[in-house]
Image 1 (cartoon, helix red, strand yellow):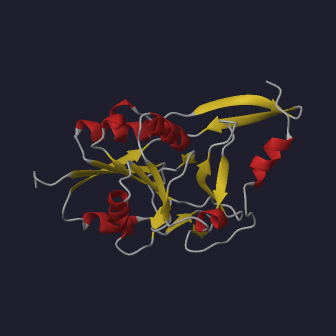
Image 2 (spheres, rainbow, N blue to C red):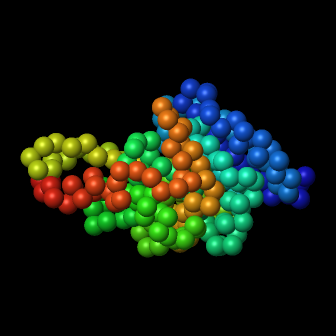
Length: 236
């Protein structure tokens, strides 16, 4: 067992419930790794994630996997698919595209813009116009299902953070945030990590309904909220 690389699976949950118990079965089936699980229950998102990140560093884990409690991978043998894509693309971080839980068909995978507070979220239509697994300049990925190669030095100087502010756009105060997933992407890229996203693993994002990545759907072909910010002058 000592000769096997260690995979630490971080499983955050706000209240201990999760919709993806079947995913645990798949992870337990990994035979060529020492798989460790860490349950995280915290109302402070970044703090909970950082506890798992620190545990992976202390355990000298070779790989780190983060799986949110409301995200269900439905692709057969999804851990093997994820590792194959990480290895084939020589990725430092590989994120599975996840839809936002609305009818818009937008995802939490995004691209940088001239405004660091307002990246442009990719729609499913835009995701399907790309390769199944891809990278591009300014790619920002989410952490719903994230696999990280922890054998690289950059992971030791990285952590999850959330930044917030209130600004004025078009005469009205607007609350804005830089979420922990996009900030992690920025830190990793600045440290030389290679960032990839994939839709090769299909997921269901479970809320009042189940929002999946198996096909193109949604009312928006591009991020309309971002387009609105372009039209609203900022008074900083």
